[in-house]
Amino acid sequence: MVNESTELRHARSRGPRSNWVPLGATAAVVVLLTGGWALVNAALPSSEAVEPGQAVTLGSSEGYGASVTFDEGWELDTGSSTLGQQLRFVKGPVNLHMSVVEPSERADASELWDGMRETVRVSDSSATLGEPQPITSDGGAQGLTGDLHIQEHTGVATVFPSPNGGFAVETQAVGTDVSMADLADAERTVQSIRFDRDTEGTS
Amino acid sequence: MSHARPEPDVPSTASGQVPTPRQSGQGHEGTEHLTAPHAEPHRAQRLPALFATLGLALLCLGGFVFTLTNFFGAMWVFPTETLAAAVVLAVAGVFGFWVLRRIRPVRPPSFTFSLLAVLWGLTGAIGLSLFSNTQLMSAWSRLGGVEFGSAWGAALTAPLNEELLKTAGVVLIAVMAARVVRGPVDGFVMGALVGLGFQLAEDFTYALNSIMMQGATDGVASVLQTLFLRVGLTGLGSHWAMSAIAGTAVGLLAASAWRPSPGRATGALLLFLLAIGVHWLFDAPLLEGILGVLFKTLVVFLSALAVYFVARHAHRRRVRESLAEQGEELGMLRSAAVTLASRHGRHRELGRVAAPERPAVRERQDRMVAAAEERASEYRV
Image (cartoon, one colour):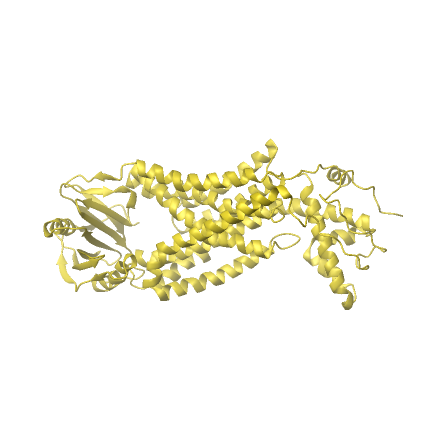
């Protein structure tokens, strides 16, 4: 203890700090992490083509997996997509947004449609969903579909609960100056959604 | 027999001021006023401090506006859920704030700068992270494909961006007020407070996102379930712990006037890499499932705990030595001086004096401890 104290007593004064250095380093970090990553992201290709006829997995839960099959011309917006959560596809003026939702308790199509009435308003408080109509996909999945009015655009929204109600696939097809043919193309894609027994277990 | 020892070869404080020697050795008598050292910042520090203050204020404002812009829609559509999340997080935040200030050895940190640290995490750091994470995660998916980006994007993005941006707040505070971050212990506590603010904001955004990810069929349940997981289950090993480790690195550098020796620079770098490493482990798609998450939480918590105890031990040792020096200069018993290093010791000493004398004695204790911490910060590790 005595030696330690003696050592402390002979410690040198450090002098004033050079505070410009840490300040400059902080500014550089902020600029690099915001501007730098934005530049890198912008320099990379924003989408990749979806192979026609090949099933794209949307998500899986409680023994079931959901997939969708595309025609020609669709592209996946890779930067805005996360497997098992949300995937954004683009074809011409149409944006097809597909999300996988997992209710905390099992919910039927009607409850999920009511929930989607709320979630579409998050990005645009004036967005509305029309009255839903029953829909059956090519693979036999039962769901609801209806008009979507968002940011002065008209589109189509659909919800398909999984067979055991553990999760659901919600889709929204909208775009600027889209024709009925464009929307019909998106609806055909949505119609191809199917639920299959998940052989790899649950996620 | 005198306990006095020779004066130090160099002044222990920059101002060279030491408490006036007392007449007896009990540590309670006398009415002299001990001058707090370093009352005025060095002139050369004023301009950087001004820039740091402006920078912190602008980034906090910008971060707040950006975060609010991103989540205002959800808050507007789900007001009950927003209120529920705010109430739960406010309670957790007050508790965390109290605990993290309380763990600083010797004395609590400045209340104002503690709040500022939380504010940085709550606004500036979270807003900047939201923006930079979106860009980098998008870049990973564009570069490696959606499957790769979905699996590894978070682990390759958040540790780097968030630890750097949270730590930036500790550096700004250290530049604004050199006395607030004088060493590793200060860095640990300020980092922890920044992390607390960041965690609260992140939990809030996760809670709102969970409503939509669960189909908005029972929003309040989604919010409470998310907060239970993020506060109750993984809260011990969350952002406060990661930032505390990174903040300790800032404290190490600040203690050497930003001119560290190679050894100290290496130590600071290793601490920062440890913060990034445990954050990476937490976000990596490894050891998934409830047991895996608990294991990761424990690793983060124990890492922070280990760093804390090392920094705390070193700080308390130096403060005790400094108090012993002061005690000798004042003619106090070493034990009476050294005991002032702890809150309990100061309280016990106060209990030994008559009630009318306590305010004056308390004031002198505060000044002695302040001077001791200032002296301790001048010592080499």
